[in-house]
Length: 356
View 1 (cartoon, rainbow, N blue to C red):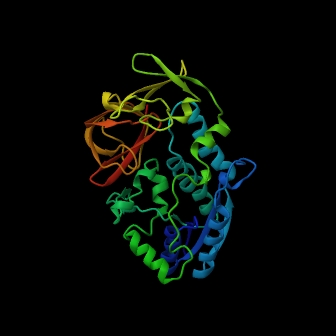
View 2: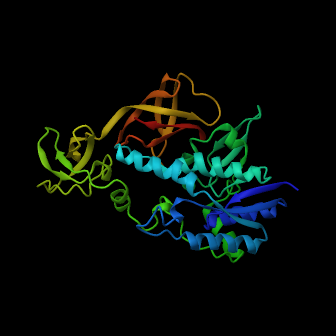
View 3: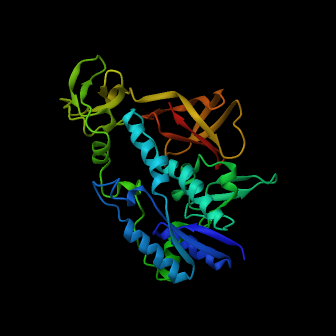
């Protein structure tokens, strides 16, 4: 009998994904990943509800009658997700740990382990649809629930990875998923969706960065280079940020926002929102990745500038094998270095890139 692995996070989506796979008549192997957040040696400053999540996943597996195991991914997660996150912030960028986790862990290292254990594919609770093309390749497209569309986070998957993945929730709305979970009396039926990166747990990103990077104080300057105050470290700020600057604007209708970072001078640049210094139409992109076919050298397409952003029209021009310049039809606010952009064609994910 064909066997398939399913990544179970202890949430409602992966619970129902496992249920649907079990109902399909295949042998299903549920697996919970122990990641870097689970190890107190590496993470002594807070807690993540991983033990509850793991036991919830185990209970669901037992309830629907599938095999369950826990796989230690701590070293891989630290190498491919947490360390790049810390290094990115230390160098003034804003990395996306969820994209890294999907690329290197769930559909990388974990998928490889699942195949070694005899599974033909790995499934997850992502809201995404996989479509087989006439030439035998696969595309990732919008799911039935557009409000829960998670294709953005899969922008760095390769064709080889996509071939061996399944998304059981592709045709379901979130409300239906919870309804199915409630009908089965799943403990996860009313469980809240996880927000952000699990390894942070209840720890604020500022406390996390303070622990692993520490303070690197410098000046806060305005558009003319005038010193307005001091900051504790550029890594605590991202483009467009308003809170935490602690510089009064002396105006009822204006406030300072972060408009740039000078890494050499260790200066945080701020300006009034009304100056519109955060808006730009042209951006350089690097580390291009395609999910199926290579990008055309020059073309018009649409993108999601960030997760949950609406589609935006752009003109794309390749400048090197992994680099491009894009021009938005509408100027965009506060797109930060290190963030991921996802490219689309009528709801089909084409790939991604990273803002320089």
